[in-house]
Image (cartoon, rainbow, N blue to C red; front, side, top):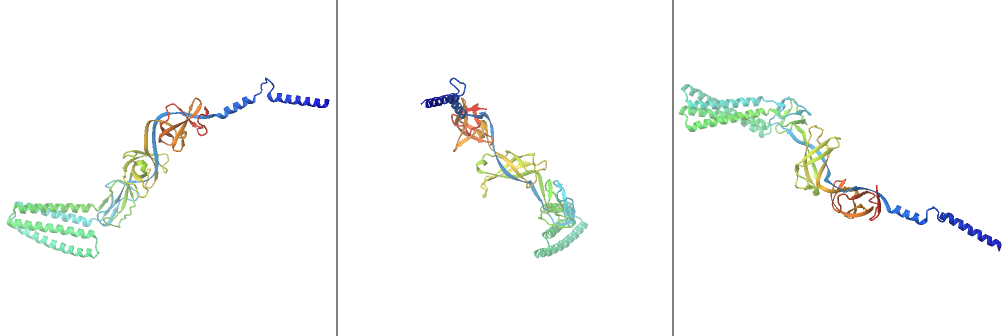
Length: 421
């Protein structure tokens, strides 16, 4: 019995000591279970977050579109007369100015036509002057001789013109050759008519009607002379615009043909580019708007384009609207075929409440943010406006100065204690 009694006493002492050690003793300084649990709950309920105050500002919403550059002016070099090239003054890649001679064509026949036209004009003027003052017997004989010569000359040219007409119908001569002989026939006919009129006037004396005819012949001969000079000028082929000469294949001794392109001149002082804009943005653009442009092939250089045309009809394939841009290329860094990126402004907002885009959360289509009020995260529904990619306008739901959570917003819940860092 005594042994069992001592065993029970020892067991009670062990239990008492263990309990004392676990509780830190009555009135001890160790933590109580209740205090430890309360602190754990506080740690879980409080979350460190970062915030920004709601501010006002101006926003500009842009969209990025790809563009391809092309010269604003690209004009072909087209001879207006044909013949053998006698001299060449330019080559592919040369920078040329408007009016600069690029090459010349054999103009000997054209010079003869000018001389014939000059002679016809002088004769018409002489006839008119002679009729106005009257003719002597000796002058009548000279006039009659001039008429005979004019008739013979016209007959020869007319016969040659008929022969050339037949050769042209058979495809044996060029159109230019036929036009040349036709012009010669016209000049010869004018000379004959003028000579005959002069003779008639000299024989009978000039009437007002005859004087009017002779005056008209002078004007006709003058026009024929101007036409012959114009044809002669076509033998000197010039640059139609300022720019760089490309695809130029003319060589001395080669044949130039009227209407056949001999080269192309590119004016790259200004470049143009087309952007295809979705229908949701097209009404936000206006002719004259300035557009920032970046070009991957020209890093570190900024370009500015100006909208010059907005096509009111959508492309049938893409259902997007072509918009043409003009870009100053004074440094000549842009080349035809380069690809660029245009940043089109599709909306602006002034003096709007703004917050970072990353602060805005969504539940379906409803946007909301968390603001800090009295140390707690409070969920706030908002209505948003323009979005720049970094900032977003808030139309309703916030006020200036409120603190919006920008870090930790995905972890907090409505009413949760937060600690602003």
